[in-house]
Length: 78
Image (cartoon, rainbow, N blue to C red; front, side):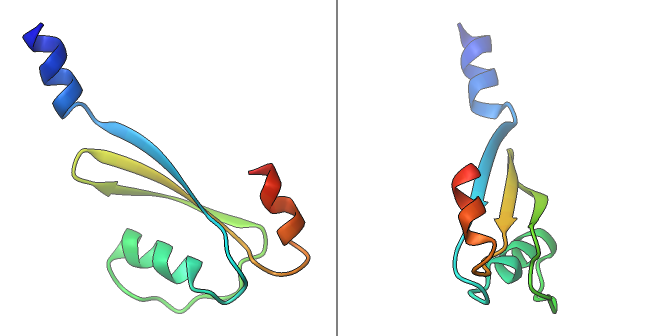
């Protein structure tokens, strides 16, 4: 029906993004550039950061996981 099509096209969508990579690669910098629209000074991520980024009708939940050697074994759990 038209109502279903309309809601499918314009309803808010939710997506999840997992960012993993080597330490000091820029994952947290990218996350906060997306979230705040500016480059911020960051410190090494111990564990993870989770932020919601809104873009048009999509809500992205972004998981930014630390990249240090001792944290990498945890990546597979995400």
